[in-house]
Amino acid sequence: MQTRTKWCLLALGFGLGLSQYRSHTLSRHGDGTIVHLFEWRWSDIADECERYLAPNGFQGVQISPPSEHIVVSKPHRPWWERYQPVSYNLCSRSGTEGELRDMISRCNDVGVKIYADVVINHMCAADAGEGGRSTRGSYFNASREEFPSVPYSAADFNDDKCTSGSGNIENYQDIYQVRNCRLLGLLDLAQEKEHVRGKIVDYLNALVDMGVAGFHVDACKHMWPKDLKVIYGRLHNLNPKWFPEGSRPLVYQEVIDLGDEPIKASEFYTLGLVTEFKYGAMLGSVFRKWNGYKLSYLRTWGEGWGLMPSDRALVFVDNHDNQRGHGAGGASILTFWEPRPYRAAVAFMLAHPYGMSRVMSSYRWDRHVVNGQDENDWVGPPSYPDGSTKPVPINPDGSCGDRWVCEHRWPQIRNMVTFRRIVSGQPLCNWWDNRSNQIAFGRGDRGFIVINNDDCCLDVSLSTGLAAGTYCDVISGQKRDGKCTGKQITVDNRGRAHFIISSTDQDPLVAIHTHSKL
Ligand code: AAO
Image (cartoon, rainbow, N blue to C red):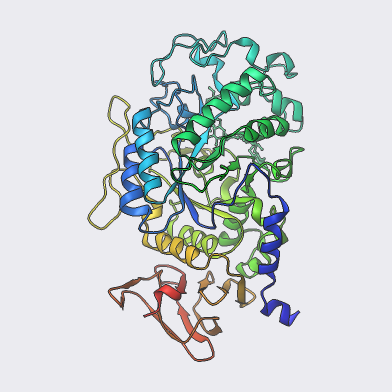
């Protein structure tokens, strides 16, 4: 076992895993990091690709749904109006089709991929009524299930198959309800119908032809995998202007599987990647030390914890739903509201080889929690009085202004995105823990991270796997003009280094990698 650990078992598991589910609808897009620029305008994303994401090595951006959606005035312009499409016109709160096209093109030109969040399970809710406002002014009649701009009509929806009394999903233990009834009252499309498939495929292919690299597919639990298989199978190859001939879109599917329902994430493994919601829920519990969890237990993090196979998993500490009490995950989810443990958890995710990682980039809102419910969980992005989204201003220190949080610009998170890129493909090595809440591990001979979540000081010498030299800690600072603005770590000829992390340090961790060598 000693030698096997030395040769880093995970390398083997990783390599095997990659080929296990390879399908024609999925190509590996690298082990980089995707940032979800939640509710950003297209023109701001284009600027961000050029000025920040490309120079800092982000793999791609998940964008908010680009299709035309209802405009909700009560409450005033909630973020969730975008999850209620009325057509597949590419005109949304984030901008026009022209702006979308320009953004995709500019991001691709600098090597940053765009992954579109697409809502294909449903249209708007029945209660949106008739003749309501929409982002491009397309007429719709939700009461009669008429969406002439697609066009869809009553025959394209699932109502006849739904067996619940209300027509909505009432029981998540009944797979037929979950897939044939309305999620939250949203009109449920019948993806087995050729007309519906065709319209969805046309919508997705319009985006592929524009240059998107793939999709986050919303609400996959609520669609039949056999229908999704047909839809994904008809997707065009990626635009050869930016991608190698024959490249396939990357598809990652939103399926909330916390283990207690009959629909399993595993039903979607052959189709693409799947969101691993257990990841953030369990990692949050570990960093909060709930249920007796200790950081040292993370030695077996990954499949050993009942998580899905690494090469299927899209992982994240929080998402746009569970950071505000929607979706699932519950109270353990860490978010930007608790910056110190949040940064540590995100750093752990980015240092660990499990899964494909996504970083959240949020905006602040005035939380108003009554009986455990946030009454302002609906609040939309920073906006002008007319409801249009405000630009993201960048402060002189690189942080974002207004209410934009920009976690991806927090130096610790940005530097860990670089760490992940540098250690890509390297096995997890040199694990150490104190049997409590202090851990450390390396990634081959490229990087090493130490985390102290105990209430007292960490003071220890460890094998890092790195070459001898002086390294700059990329958490307390970084290498700039050959000098280190943070802690310096000296690795000796045997690869050992001494680490000190006090429980009062701004961040409870230290990370070094080959590019931070002085
Ligand atoms: C809005 C209003 C609604 C109104 C509706 C229609 O808020 O009051 O009825 O309009 O007028 C977003 C917002 C919604 C919003 C919707 C449309 O979150 O509030 O509704 O836009 O504007 C399920 C789905 C999952 C979904 C999640 C929200 O499975 O796909 O609900 N997420 C995506 C998006 C999300 C979006 C939509 C889908 C719709 O990310 O932003 O909605 O396009 C269980 C199930 C989960 C289920 C959750 C929540 O979770 O397992 O599948 O998610 O419940 O209903 C334990 C369990 C765990 C369980 C959890 C919570 O932890 O282990 O499994 O408890 O009960």
